[in-house]
Length: 281
Image 1 (cartoon, rainbow, N blue to C red):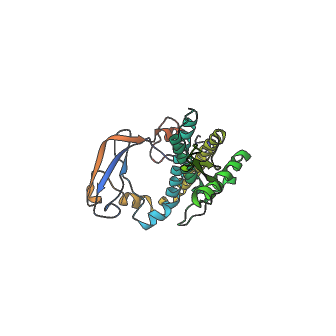
Image 2: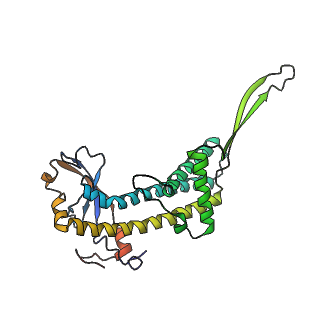
């Protein structure tokens, strides 16, 4: 994807690298903050002032859609990782009951993560429409099967897809007739063949691209709302500046090594050259 494909896409404006940090603060949202944060640095290793869009009602409201979409993308990435694992295991023939259980567990997990994105939920969560995402009838057909498996076999356990067969073994010695063992076989009618798993992988890749487009649109709206409703001067006033720990009434501890960067994203939209602050491509 390129900037031409997303004419409204203006971020990121600079290549940045990020370091993990933790805050020991006394003011919201830093008091007893449960997760690490990240501090952005320019290529010249200058730390960027930043805001956590949490702990301020107005900031949380206008950022809710973009955070929800990112959580949705995380679910799809987990689902794709699980299916990638299963297909890699399937390519190596292993007649092992434990391996079959592991693969079934990964498939069930993938189905749960995937299906929740298309099911009504509360708290303002976003529900996707598969008909607007998949244009191939093969994808739509498999989508319906996956959601049906989720409803019937995993979530509600109606017994429609999974079957346990019970057997009784008798002593082969006719002189001593007796029951000597019970044993079982499990059949999963809701399982998927390798070709379906590969199709599912394709669907997950398409889904990630679709959610990315929604994230870009939500970020564009967030950028406008932050500028129009909060104002750039107020954003700088509210921001935390590394080195000025009075802003959080506490202390910040920053890791030495960089955790990740945005170079790939930057190059995708802007090419190799950095943009000057304030300049749009």
